[in-house]
Length: 352
Image 1 (cartoon, one colour):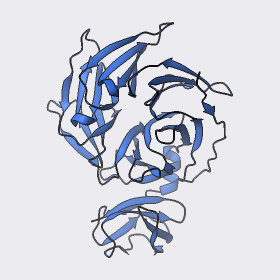
Image 2: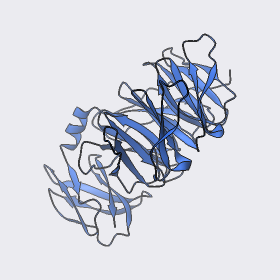
Image 3: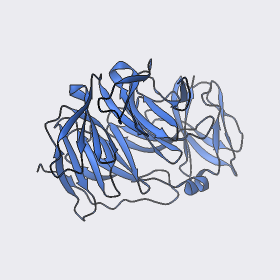
């Protein structure tokens, strides 16, 4: 077995702070891409460069790592249904599967003819596939002995990641700088924008109605954002910074596990429950977003100190604001900015 370094550092999380702290789980990997859990303690990780699928057992005090499969051609996306583990072989433009119930698992080809695929999602018996290189979402019916690849939606802008929430398929459009969605119950499928003006979003996942987004805008200093998809105009909240190409997420027991492709590690952070977030924000909103001249904060119970930073972290403005006060940003250059309140609440907004 190749040497993988296990870090058992205790996650340091301060209640009522949105500045979550990252903790290393496994280091010494080689460009890990996707990860998923089969139970509360066992996860699979695809390693792009080595062509391996790793099985990691987190139950022991020192996690156990074994190579489930090797010799694959740049594996990326993972999905599981019943006992079958589905794997995208990006370099071979196909999907394979492994029957996990077998003592000695064998590899079977499921479908070929993909174009630079990175992510999958399963809804009922349909396997949805993001074809980043073809700018489309396709699907296959897993009940068919010889599945046929069918286009679901085309004309996207490099779809890199998929996530299911109810009957809706959410799509991370890397070069489109946005998250879009499709209602899978509609007779004629249409793409709807969920949030735009992001910075190279690459991966997404859900915890309840919170959508977590991994951005690649600043190489080797990437961030995790989140939005509440139940909001008509979702507000972007910064969750963590300083990541190195977050390529996939998985949520287990209020912990967000992150595959950092350029960091060659799996890390984790504690994420708050809705009740804590409600206490934190008390419904505070920033509007309008985007803007050309002024922004306001609503639902503030008292005057708050604030700072505004550009996307590179430089402070642009500071001051004190109260409920619905105007904050003048008309002299700001067009771009993305962060407004941070003294208690740690952060809002991301765009100046046009």
